Amino acid sequence: MKISEEIMANEILRNIQDKFETQTEKGIAKYGHTVRPESLSVFEWINHTQEELTDGIVYLECLKKVYEQISECENLFRAIVDETNAVSAEVNNEDLLRSIRNMAQVGLEVFSKE
Image (cartoon, rainbow, N blue to C red; front, side):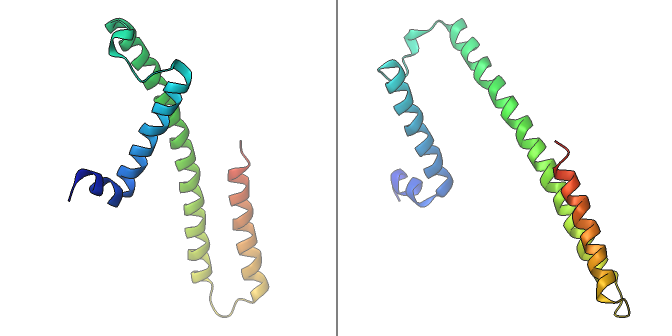
């Protein structure tokens, strides 16, 4: 299989290729050309890379926060499942619904912290 076929067959590689193409289009629109190694000094390239990586660190920190919120939500769902499984057949439906409502309210409070 050719490399171009491998890329087309692999969603991740296709997405990366699309990003390269999009970035290249943005660069051409902004600067009138693709990247030119001679356009910056080594020091300027290092500085530019540091700036880009700093942005990346900020994005990763945001993703960590989102992941924490998702994990909290997942834990709440597990607690709801555990609670409903633990309820015996003798408990009336109103008690079960009240318990589920209370857990759902806790979940809402978690997401409204910010």
